[in-house]
Length: 290
Image (cartoon, rainbow, N blue to C red; front, side, top):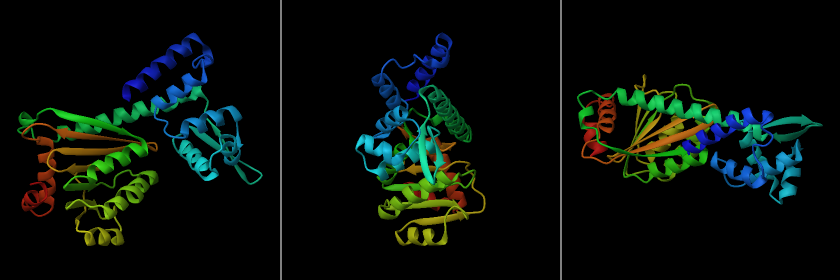
């Protein structure tokens, strides 16, 4: 996916130099549809964007009628485009109107996605630097999978919940409302319904409410509340070989799942030992990760 973003970015820059205003960037609607899919538009988002682009500023009901879609579905999709900076709204006569950004302005969206990738890469690099230098000699190759957007993070959550052993770390640093909503309404709700047999949750005292902690403990989770979280980002340890990270930048979500394919996973082991010491000793490590 990142290659597509960079390719699209290059095409835009070349087109801007050759054709001011980028009027000729997309020669056909089908070409624009293909680009939208490559940069992360999913499901009905492509149809709704194309129709809204053609109609201009309109209520969701007009766009829905033109496409033969449910008004609620159309409105919800348009709101998501607004949240991602791909559309904007205006109030007229007490009615909300929507207009999508022009294809030329998609360049800004792509640049934000590139920044998001750089941020995630930086956080991952810092996490790796925390690994004890004596352990790095044991690092072996990793298989990496990346996920984009809310739907991509839902897929990552499903992967985590399929584990037999799960260690969840909830930091409370710099969380936006949309990020909190994703965790609380999507992941924690799914966790309460389908919890791995061995589940340990580390959270700051402001990350979870008392009611949420009670429900999670009733389902069998062991919850540890910390005054200070040693990690600056949320992460999950899935079984003995997978480590997952979630990041958000300006309302855009991305995630990575790293699967260790050798006999010793130093990063996984380092995180586990750090959490074990916070939980009262290394007995936690034996219980949670063996």
